[in-house]
Structure formats: structure tokens, C-alpha cells
Length: 207
Image (tube, rainbow, N blue to C red):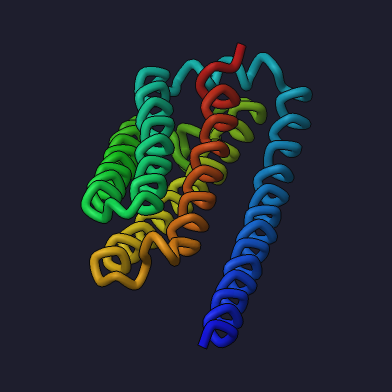
């Protein structure tokens, strides 16, 4: 019986290690994706420094700062959710996960209002207002919409994943003995936050 139990535990640990490795490989591809975009941004910024600076002045630094605070705090609540589950406190883990989802929703709402303001001023891809601007500003806003839009998509995917994690914890499918799914979800969420930490200064604090 003991040998059977030991074999089962070994099998679970091996599966957990495989899942962890798979998540790290996935995160690596995400880093390559955004890393390529950051490289393109750097090249165009070098070619049009003044126009990039002028375009950045049209963004709302206050909203960008608020969203940065929101995401940084959500990383903390995500970590607390994982730590709580590891200690066997399902209720606190689910609570922290709910707070993380709330912060994610706040981020998306802020992003909606920010984009809506830009659209109302005629600044969106292909708009007559944007087309008449210098090439540097067109490139800046093109990168702004692509990169922040792709990031927002990742936030949305993260919200879906964390919602599933909440249900799994509630149904005891993710427990203190088997929390690798929640741990991997946390890694994904931390990457989403990390990407924003790079996006924020590039678009909102450019000098």
C-alpha cells in the first residue's frame, strides 16, 4: 500500500513539474512576442524622437498611473491567494482571487474610457485626424493601439483563467495538496503585470 502511495505521489509530482515547465515555455514565447514589439518601438522612437514625445503628451498619464497601481496591487492579491491556498485557507484564497479579478475589471474599465476618449478626439487607426499627423505620431499611436490592445487581450484571458481557478478551488479541484494550476495562473498574471510595467513608461512617461 505504501509503495502504491509513493508511486502515486511521484506521478503527481512529475505531472506538476511537466505543467510547470510547459507554463514557463509558454511565458517565454510571450516574452519573445512583446520583446519583438519593444524592439520595433525602440527603432521607431530613435527615428522620430520629437514626434513620439509630442504624441505621448496626448495620453492621459493619470489613467496610466492608476492602471499601473491597480495591476501592481493585483499581483500582490494573486500571490496572497496562492499563499493562502498553500496554507489550506480556501476562503481567503478565493477572497484574494476575487479581489484580483476586481482589479482586473477596474483596469479594463479604465482602458475602455481611455480608448473611448481617444476615439472621440478622432485619434484611432485610419482616422482622418491621425492620418494628417506626421509619420512619427502615426507610428506612435499605431504601436500604442497594437501593444496596449494586445496587453488588454491578455488581461481578459487572465480574467477567464482566474475565474476558472475560483470555481476549481470552490469545488476542491484545486487544493493545498494540488495547487499547480493556481500557481501557473499566478505566473501568467505576473507576466501580464510585468509587461504593463514596461508599456507604461514607454507610452505615458516618454521624455
